Length: 200
Ligand SMILES: Cc1cc2nc3c(=O)[nH]c(=O)nc-3n(C[C@H](O)[C@H](O)[C@H](O)COP(=O)(O)O)c2cc1C
Image (cartoon, rainbow, N blue to C red; front, side):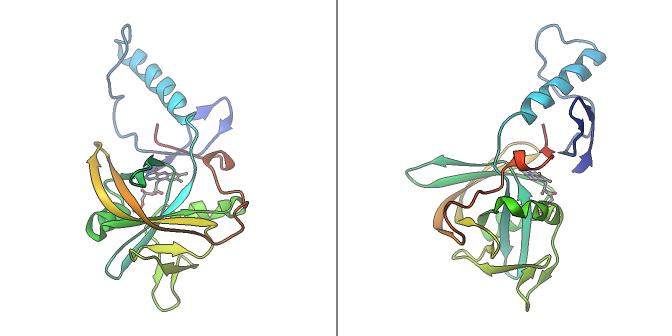
């Protein structure tokens, strides 16, 4: 995973991307040469980047190992039962912790905390005595996954299914606890509040 800033009409927009080699198919009819494939790849990314998302910090824990990770690929996927799914890179430390700890939390940050997003893009420094993740105070949720004190709202999930999606795993968790830590009307962070994109 690396930070790239391809040229766009909107200027230099930071993109978190996982591009490692030549464009992957399938390709629509008429896209045959390497040049056409590159062009289509760029177009496909721009379309995928247009998809609207929220922006979260995922909390994960296995024993005394904890992490917080910035993530936008999150959605509720069922209301009976209450299931929430997140797409997590297989190389991420968070992936290892969720697979082992069988739980995750989803922290919804207040809009004004957008700077926090950049603090959770690699494994965090945990202060177990001060109970901080990269300086952000946390407490353990019902599952044991860390919940940031700064979160406006949060859900705590027990892992129910892990769907292999190639480079990512779609972890589906059941909400076993949830809460607000700020006024319910507090605007929460969305992808559009930053100048960042992920994947594509
Ligand atoms: C705006 C933004 C959105 C991101 N969205 C995701 C995501 O949906 N899934 C994911 O696996 N990583 C996402 N990342 C990358 C992770 O935050 C992180 O850099 C990487 O997965 C390593 O996490 P780790 O600390 O668990 O090793 C995103 C990063 C940024 C800056």
